[in-house]
Structure formats: C-alpha cells, structure tokens
Length: 142
Image (tube, rainbow, N blue to C red; front, side, top):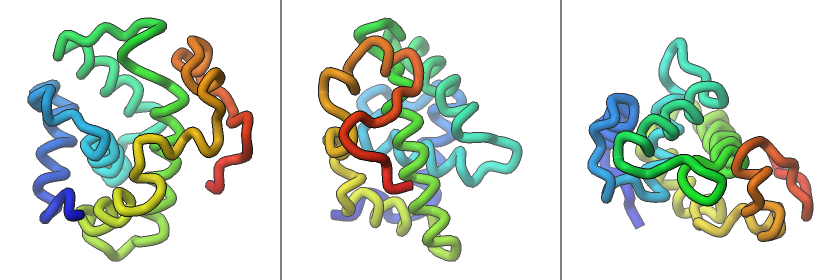
C-alpha cells in the first residue's frame, strides 16, 4: 500500500502538526510517523525532545486532553521515533515518502508492533504514558 506519493505530503503533515492546523481526522498512525520523519530531517530539531512537545500541543489544539488515560504517550512516541530514525538512517538517499512507505509496509508500520517488545500491562500503564519504560519482553532492535 502506498501511503504517501511525494515528500510534499509529509511536509504538509509535519507543518500541520507544528502549526497545530492539521485536521484531526488526518492524525493517523501513518501521520504520526510522517511527522517524526519530518522532525528528524529538520535542522535544529531533535525528535526525542521536540516530538513530545509537538504532539502534546497538537492534542490540546484538537481537543484531546493529555492525561493518564488519553492523549500523549511517552513510551510509544519515543519507541516510534527510534524506529523512524533507524529507517531513515538505513535509507539516506531515499526520498522521505519512499522511506516512509517502506516503514509502513514493514512490521514497524503495524499499529501493534510495540506488543512484540512490551506486554500490554506495561505498555499501557500510566508510568509508560508519562515516561520512557524499557521493553519488558525483549529489547528493541535499534
């Protein structure tokens, strides 16, 4: 499946999250990775530092509260940033949209990929939502 046909689509998502103008229905699983790819390629931005702030602010702008049960999730965000960073590092010459389509076609593109590394009770705990929690099933491959 092709998620994105050009880098301009990723730019639109990244800018939309940054400016908090992306329509909420477009904030999909693939769009989360698109925003991460965009941040990873932005000079002066640090994905581990900036993605949490961007997502929290975007959530609030679209009416989603960041609480212990909804909104921003630290462990999922940082694990996804690691996956995105690895995919980009392994494909330095590829256009963003091609690398992102490959990520989405891989096991890391599935919305349940984290459950290979974290048990549900750990991943969906309040602690994992608030702060990074190391995987309890097996280490991440990156």
